Length: 411
Image (cartoon, rainbow, N blue to C red; front, side):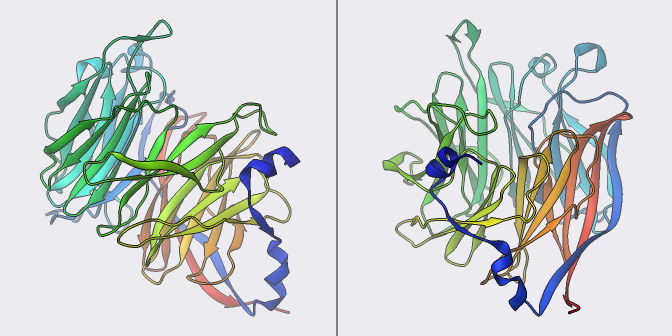
């Protein structure tokens, strides 16, 4: 990484090996089971789009525990673009058939999609773009998707192209959800949903936003907050657009409060989980390793503390592309990254409630071209990662069960 890149990341660095000798026990994480959830002979074209997983909060009569939601984009001759969903049991088996949520405008939609998901008491809320419109649907615990309803549409042109939604983010709040939705022209809509997935309030910001935003898991009693990616001039060490992640706090009307704050995180892939009284962010910095920072959360504000960079030794192969994370019931964070390049690889940071993270290589088997961030779900002995990828056989969605256990290292 160039010195220029390190300068705008603003991280304190710590070599991972500095504490390795002090560790008498360490986690052994290995993939113990893989199952194919869905496949298609045609490759999907929507690179960069994540898979979403939401727990089934309602009772399912057929044993489904999680809803998986993803988007498949193909030429019209191969079925066009659609949002798909599947339900998964504790044994990683698909429950029932793969379902689809479609509207006519979506079939010819191209480019990275705007999909967001939140778990509600009455089902899984799915938000998605189709043409100039933005839609919502609810998937019940029994796998029935309600007819999509249009929430709003955008108009006008931006640099000769039709305006449309380019990003969205949703998160549970109370027994409902909140969402932020951004269009190509920089406009932002903030939506609040009730427990049934109906829009309870909608606010259009007067401010224009020049970057993507993602909501943070701050909990029900702390302020609502998001990261705003603000582009910087120049070119990064690997040809990417440099950027800063700015912390933006919202009021109960879902409007921004004050001025965005620098967080020390940059343009690299990141994921966040909720810790007691904190939000923990893991950002995978190029090929170097993982930067981890905790943002203290109180009833009034969210603090900013400088993240620390933990080096991978040796450095990763390929460049960090897709990040996901999950917090287990015993307080361990599993932060996963998928790298791209000549070969896809996955790497894992095992982060205890207090102490130093330990990095593991190629724990989750990935093949071909991974399309986006994997979905992660908790397991009693580790986690499950659901990965969407293209290979020589077409498109596939695979679920991998990773078991982690503490073992005593041999001297």
